[in-house]
Image 1 (cartoon, one colour):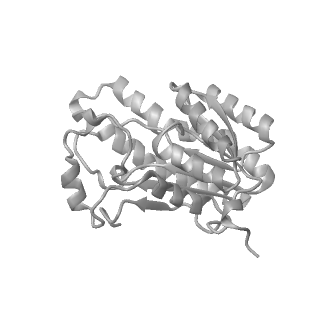
Image 2: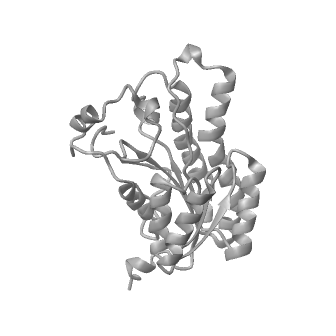
Length: 256
């Protein structure tokens, strides 16, 4: 008999980066609600991280906060080390960090390019390289990389660095899925579409919300919880034969 949904991740430990708000928070809360021990990660807003931890604990879940700049390999290593010390293992790793700068291509400096890559793409590499040995030891693991539909369609002009990084995330997912499937580790990408999140709207002046809603067949923005549901599937035992894939959560806005 399959366990109740509420216990789907009982005994599992998850790290969710960028989980102090928005999609990361929703994924962390959902995993915790189903029994996982969850590490809540942020970089600058300690209060937000602590609030998510307390929200999980208030619902009788298990969580700890860890402040780390995941664009720095040594800080990711320390977070993984602390997670294993606290919970004994790492079973699920979700890389969910990124910035979306709107810059004309010829205005992008080498420093701008490096900054976006170091924030949007490199942290997934760092996280994977530190968690995979622990997953290999148990011959079970789930890695989910949060990309975006601009990495598959291009979406708008003046975001060359972001589009490249988002596409690179899925390239990394496919490479890892191929190499570590033998160890019982699945690696997948989630590409959210227009999701109703707290954001810097100064970077979205080219996209009127009302116009976007008209373009989406479902006629609305998505919810962070709906991205979390996709993450739940990919991290579950029932999702164990899904690997190297991208799951688009965009309300039918773009179909691939």
